[in-house]
Amino acid sequence: MEKKCKKCNVVRDVSEFHKVKGNKDSLSGSCKLCVKERRKVYREANKDKIKKRAKQYQEANKEKYKGYVKEYYNANNERYKELRLKNKDKRKQYLEENKEKLREKKWQYDQANKKKAKEYYRTNKERIRVVRKKYLEANKEKSSEYSKKYREVNKDRVLEYSNQYQKSRRKTDNLYRLKLNIRANIHRYLKDGKSKRTREIIGIDYKEFQDYLEVEYTEGMHLDHIIPLSWAIIDEEVYILNHYSNFQIITAEENFAKSDTYCKSENLKKVLDNHNDLTKLNKIIERNSDKIT
Image (cartoon, rainbow, N blue to C red):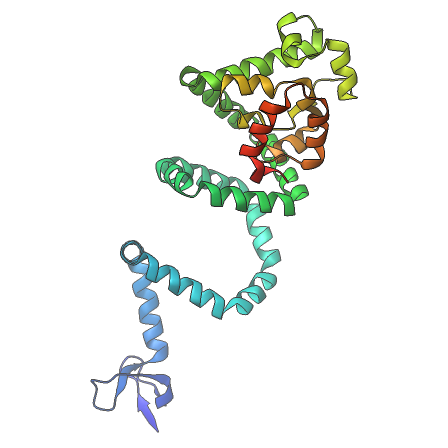
């Protein structure tokens, strides 16, 4: 059985027409190809309108939309895997060719959505920390290499952001200011060994500290806190975590990958064997036991 399309005037099989309940023959007047072309033209001419309408729908039906997306993805998981493998090289080439453009676009998006991102992080802090920790453990080399490349390409941006952040937080956060001051003093002490006050904080003199670290400190090396200094929530704990037993020398890549997110249990043993105040130290460790790997 055949039918003539009112749009292109071509006689086609009825299977080439959409079913429509209201029409006499229960078929659309235009064939599927013409309908497809008409929809394409409409989408091109009304991109912003369609985007806005879709966004409004998603906002009004968050849970329903989320469930639909999840259901569709699970039903087509294998298809997506095949497509990703098929287009892997093409995607890699696109990312390489548009690296600067995409980086700038992400930067602009981040700046425009700062408040929204902060609120999301505040309400999903624990979930984000767990996901990030798992990812870093599974992709240590990849993450380290990416961080290194990003810092090399964006040296000025990273430095400017770091300086602005420190300057702003120094003014309002006394604990943060104390952490930075002690860290700076210890770095100076490793170079000249002159400060008596710094010696009192770390617990041993300059030469003993160098021997304990087993590596002579030079520019480019990173002096790392085995138990992250961010775990300190009062002034006294800042001093507890700046004892010589809590330091190690690592590479910049290792330090940036580790950040202040976790503490390795194998390194923790060394701290416990040499620290002079285990009672207070154990309180800090117990409070952050979920961050020890």
